[in-house]
Length: 266
Image 1 (cartoon, rainbow, N blue to C red):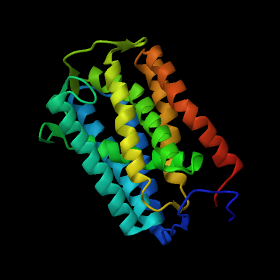
Image 2 (cartoon, one colour):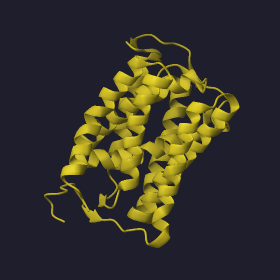
Image 3 (spheres, rainbow, N blue to C red):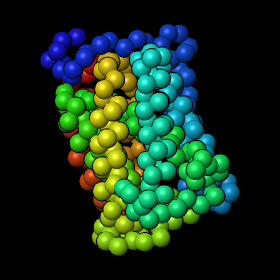
């Protein structure tokens, strides 16, 4: 391996999960993908259960992969930062309307702590891991990772918020300005995601960069991108959401995917 392939700061080599253990993240990834396919086909209380399974499996795919390939200390740091941050920013948001706007969670997503369902910080953590690794391939600076990563998280929410609001998992009490094609979600929410994502990605990038076999998080990120476009355009009848998400995430996904293909790390 040479620095021409990867030029990020604090370059370290991650470890490989040995033997059958390396299949654990793949198992959780398969459960995630299967549950997200099933989610489209069911409704009502069953859909809520499948949502919980999907978020939990994705979270465990990210956490187990991080542990097996980047070590216990790195994983503890990643989980401490992403889970606590995801919970705290949602507590702040529901209590003060900053940075996302005026919204409240319903009881649909299950147990909550200070009005924030426990699945929510898990969702922040599950997606932050593959996104962090992706933007670190595109930028060698903390500022670059923060800005690109914040945008990436915001663009993911182009898909997430319309879908989850449609299911009644949270509600907006005030809308104000909207993006054309994503009606019912305030523009402030997306700007809040960008701001919040910048802070989270900057914090996560303080962890040592470790190059490791990342097929699992790469697969989950590509699946998240492609499946959300398909779901919004075909199954949910939201072409505007599909376009915004495809372009917003695509400006990061496309150069990242090109770099994966043209400059493999392993």
